[in-house]
Each structure stands twice: as structure tokens, then as C-alpha cells.
Image (cartoon, rainbow, N blue to C red; front, side):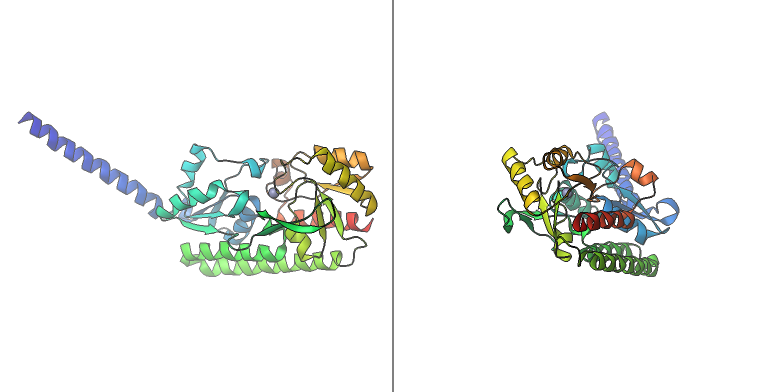
Length: 314
Ligand SMILES: [Zn+2]
């Protein structure tokens, strides 16, 4: 008798637990976040900045990779991952820049989150010039840095806006209007790059991190990279010596480095060749200082253009 009571109590308890669980899962999807706004989580900076520009005041956008962190090495903590389950929309690039997001995306999709792999189908093989001056794709790595080409960036923006419109239908017209404004700005940026870069006296530029392949291809330039697709890949002393020789042969006077990550190798090379150092920002992440200064995708792309013009004309 007593045992039967216990069993009944257990059954009730389990039903309650089941109900609570069911409710919380559902509630996080149905309860509107701050004033009915949908919540968007993004991985790298360009996706975040485009989402913010499309969201305006109608959606809240969070960036998962913290400011100042080297994106290629980043892995979110379990606590951070748990927080992402609160998303209505999850936006990642795909490829080697945010590989941790791929698995998470599968889980989020099961929870009913709208998931966007913004770089889907855009990646090409890494194009680089090797020590003998031959441009080739190495067949091993797909280059993730598509956002540095303003035309490919428009596709990223379109996919972000589509997901937001699909998830938050009542603000669809608003998101589409913001997307049109953003695409117009990207077209203007493309025109500025085109006008400034198609007539420079040199075509070759040296960078420490091979992030500018798509940009170089768009404007018919030639990226020569000291490191690989990830800035942590270190070149051999032999490669550094060959790069120094190449700089002399082609009258390359600048080594272009990322502002955020370590540029020791580039500085060593610059010292060896007597070259000067200029910043070319890969826009994978911003520092707190950049954010405080009010920088964004467009302001940094324009700073990059000024420095490129200098490197390619002097
Ligand atoms: Zn990179």
C-alpha cells in the first residue's frame, strides 16, 4: 500500500518535471525577448556588424567571439554555448574561421532556432603566390575570408536579412529596407576600391596573414602572404629569406600587418628588408579600443584602402 503511494507520487513528480521541462523549452522560443525583439547570435565581427545594421532597433544582436580575441584560435566555453540556446537566429560563416559553430548549429536547429551558414558555397581554394612566384591554389584549404570582398559581403548581408525576415515576419519590410541601404553602401565601397586600386603603380602587396585573397582577386591585385590562412602558421627562415628577396626584386616597400594580432614575424621581415610596416585589418574581430573609437566594417575597410593605395603607389 505504502509502496503504491510512493509509486504514484513518483509518477506525479515525473509528470511535473516533464511538464516544467517542456514548458521551459517552449517558453524560451515563445516568450518575446526585451520588448518583443528577436535575439540573434553571430560568430565573427563582419556578420555581427551586418546583422546590427539590418536589425536596427527591431532585433537584439550578440557577438559570441569576445572583443580582442584571435578568432582562428577561439572555442566558446560550455557556459557561453549554453547561453546561445536562447537565440532565435544563429548566424555563422562556416569553414575554418568558426569550425566550432558547425556542430552547435546542428543542435540549435533541433531546438527550432533559425540557423544561417552565411558563407555557404562562397569559399574557394586558397590562392597565393609561392616562393617561386607561381600563383596557385594548394588544394588543401578553403579560404574563409570572403567578407573582405564587398561584392561577396553583399551575399552575406542578404542571407542574414533573409533569416531575420523569415523569423520575425512582422518586421520583414523594415529588415529588407535596411538590407537595401547596406547593399548600396557595399556597392559604394566596391566603387571606391575599384577606382583607387585599378590604376596603382604596383600590383603586389605583402601581408602577414593570408586574409586578403578574395579582395585581391576582385581588384586584380596579388597577395603575397608571410603566414598562411591562420596568422599562427609560422613561415620557415628559408621562406622569410625568399620573401625578402622577392620584396627587393619587385620594389615592395611595405609589409602589411593586422592591427590586432601579433605581427612579430612581419616586423622581423620588415627589419631585414628595410621595409616599412602598414596596417591591413582583416576585420575578423575588433578590439575594445576600436569599438570605443566607433569603428565598424566600413570605416576599417576605408582605412585599409588608404593603406593599400600607399603600399601600391610608393
Ligand atoms: Zn583569418
